[in-house]
Amino acid sequence: MTEKPPREGKRPTIADVARVAGVAPAIVSRALSPSRRPVSLEKKERVLKAAAELGYHQNPLARGLATKSIDLVAVIINYLSDLSDLDLFDPLLDAIQSLGKQAILIRVGRTKRIDDFLRNSLSYHVHAALVFSDFADAGEVRALFHSDNVLMLNGRSDAESARIHIDEERGIGELVRHVRSRGVGSAVLVTGRASSLVEEARIGAYRSACAAADIRLLLEIGGDYSYESGIKATAAIAQALPDAVFCTSDSMAMGVMDGLGRGGRRPPSDYLLYGFDAVEKGNFAAYDISSVGFDRSALVAGILAYLKAPDEFPATGLDIPTRFIARGTG
Image (tube, rainbow, N blue to C red; front, side, top):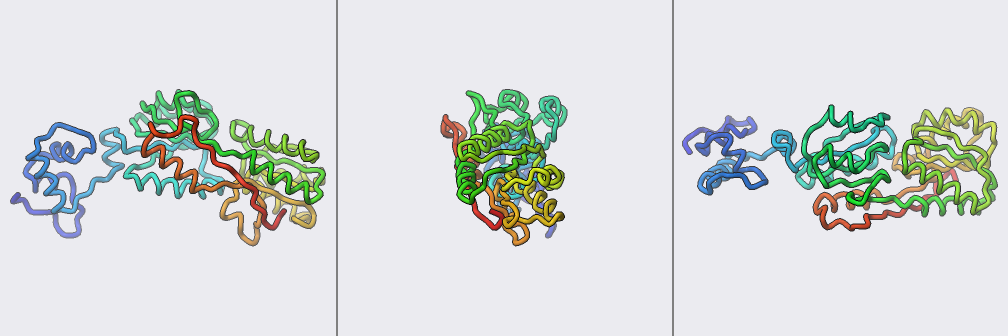
C-alpha cells in the first residue's frame, strides 16, 4: 500500500480506497457489500484495512441506488401537509436511518392510478415498503417494488401483507361520552378525504358513538384535513348552531376555531370543539384543542420492529389504541 491517501479535508472515495488497497474499484464495492459477493479473502482484508486507514464509510443511499439493494425503504404517502404528518414522519425517518437504511418518500397526491405513477417514477428493489397512501393496494405494491415486505398502514392489507391498525373507535368513544357528560345534545362532524378507508372507519365510529350517546349529528361537512377546509366549513356550522363540532383532524379544527371566531363565537363558552390526532402544535395557547390521539413512538417502534425482522412480525398485525385528550376547547 504505497499510494498516498486523499489530501486533508477531502472525503475519501471508493477510488481512494482502491488506490491504497492496490485493487480495482469494483473489488472495493464487492468487499464492502453487505451481501456476499465474489472476492478473495486476501483482497477483502486489504480493502477493509485501507478503508479503516482512510476513514471511508459508505453512503447507504448511494449504495442502495447503485445496486438497487436492500438498504432502501419506500414510504408511500398522499401528502406531507397536515400537522400530524410532521409529528410522525420526522421521527420515522430518523428511525429508518438508525437501521442503516434510507427512506424514499413517494408522494402520490390524489391520483388513483398509483401503479402508473410508480412505474414511471421508480424501478428500484427495496427492503420494504411502508404504505400510508389511501390508494395503494398491497398486491400492486409488492409487484411494483419486487418485495414481499409490505407494511400496510392505510386499511388495505391482504393475507400476504403485514399491517398496523390504529384503534380509533376507543378514543372516539371516550371523546363522545365526555361530550355527552357536558350536556351536549347536537353536533356537526367535519370530515377528511372520502377516498380513505381509515377516514371511512373514523366517520363510522363517530356516527355510532353519537347514536349510542343520543347526540344528534346535524351535519357532516366534507373537507380534506386542511386548515383551509376548516375555514370553509364554518359558514354551514354557523347556520346549524350545534353544541359541539367534531373535526377529523386538528388542522381542520384550527380552521373552524378561527372561522367561527371571526363571527364572535369561541370555544368553550359558545360551543365545544374537538380535533383529531392530538398534534404537538395543537397544544399551543392559541389552539388548545381537545383531541383524540395515540402514542406515535409506539407506531414508530412497531414499524421499526417490522423493518428489522419482517418474518417475525405478528401474523395478525399490530393494534395501537387511541385515547381522548382533554384540552381547553372541550
